[in-house]
Amino acid sequence: MPALPSSDQNYFVTQLECGMTGEALDRNAVHNLSPAGYPILVRYDLDAVKGYVSKADLKERPQDMWRFRELLPMRSVESIVSFGETFTPLINLPSLRRDVGGGEIVVKDEGRLPTGSFKTRGLAMAVTMAREFGIQKIAMPTNGNAGASFAAYATRAGIESIVFCPDDTPDINMAEIALQGSRLYRVNGLINDCGKLVGKGREGGHWFDFSTLKEPYRIEGKKTMGLELAEQYGWDVPDVIFYPTGGGTGLIGMWKAFNELKALGFIDRLPRMVAVQATGCQPIVRAYHTNDRHAPLFTNASTVAAGIRVPIAIGDFLILDAVRDSGGFAIAVDDAAILAARETVGRREGLLLCPEGAATYAAYIEAYRQGLVGQKDSVLLFNCATGLKYPMPIPTDFLDKDGAIAFAEI
Image (cartoon, rainbow, N blue to C red; front, top):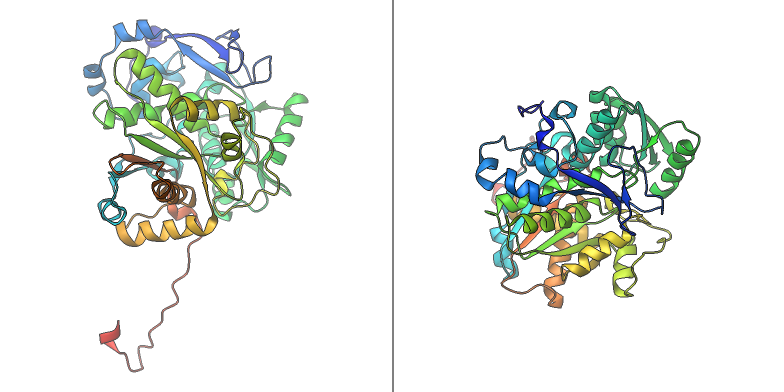
């Protein structure tokens, strides 16, 4: 448990509201979607926050996601469910910057978090709030990493948890989920099919639905990526942020964070937000290019980047709003480009990206080629999980210790 004062004096939530209609909702009640059927956002008294906490105050706190407690929704720090969610590093890619000829390229490596992915942030916060509300049983669909975080934090909180995943989810993710205490069920379908099963169980009163954006608080956990990033940049932001986008919680959360920080006077400008998808599953990219606010179901979704294989996102309009309001864009790259990017970053910089993280580098290269990103623009790429969780090519070069070895050719 972080060493933070136990007090409600840091609680600045004013209300919850429907992300589409703006309808105000009771902050003291348990919610899934709003009455209109849309994701719910948490709102804060930012004027009060401004008078309570300063940049100097933050310097005195532990470097973890809970340091921003005035902009987080828990009433008491005793509710916090934690494995030690420390700041994740910013890693410069100087060799690739020289290769490309563009501006600064930085990776925020979220694979250093507990459970090895950025899903830790959202699930740590959502489970914390479930604990605060006294929820006893929760269920969710997953493509892998979210399920691992969900299982770990639910078990730590003493909450019963059930996970449904597509049957082609990476084995290591399924093993994590099961070993960390959730009941795991493989499903012959995609994540949206798994989500339907979770929804049916919720309708029957069997559990609380923890699906992406179907409760208000995962956004607030993912928001800490933006709060943390701004502080790491010396209370500034990069020019462009490339974010691997499936359900889009992190992109929505970061955009919310940057706007809250600007309202507080902590930062003076906002970054351009880029939603990165795979060509085999690009509902957001299609909606962006057709100027729609909602993204229809993407049929026959398939990509090596399992984490962004989300055929339909309930928060589609919030993702698209953030992209457009920021002056950003949505872009898709194919699996060949994703795998090539993973290899390039690994061989040139020694940094092992997950496929979803590699997609952001591939997208940056394509965006730079198209002129969507300028030569002087600083870019931030999100590596959303450790590359160690994913299948990798097996080296095949072999030496016979008893045979003739041409050392000059090695």
